[in-house]
Length: 105
Image 1 (spheres, rainbow, N blue to C red):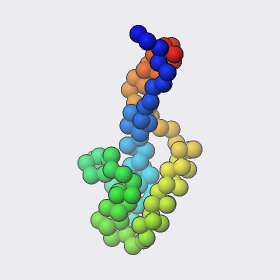
Image 2: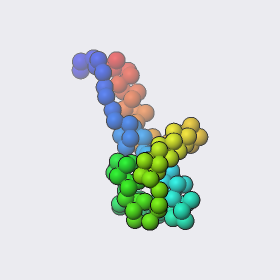
Image 3: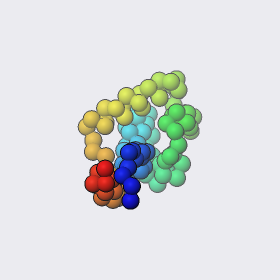
Image 4: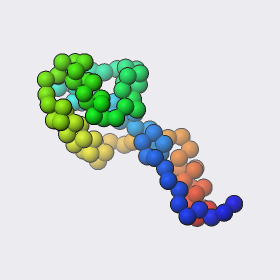
């Protein structure tokens, strides 16, 4: 097998299981407006959707009166803060795969 010069991975959903993290962040924001999503609802309707589209959809669905840009900024800031304070779960076999490529480099 040839030596690798580079291996590229997408982070979100490939190396880390971030869906529950995103779900918790949105619920933290929505809680201020008396709204709470179930994880089933999150997975069915919002998982894998770009954040600005989710911001628009959620504010419209729940009648949250705020500027879309304000909601997006709030969500981005919360994400950065939570990445500092919460653990994100690795996808299955990530360490095995990364170890494989490290040994082959």
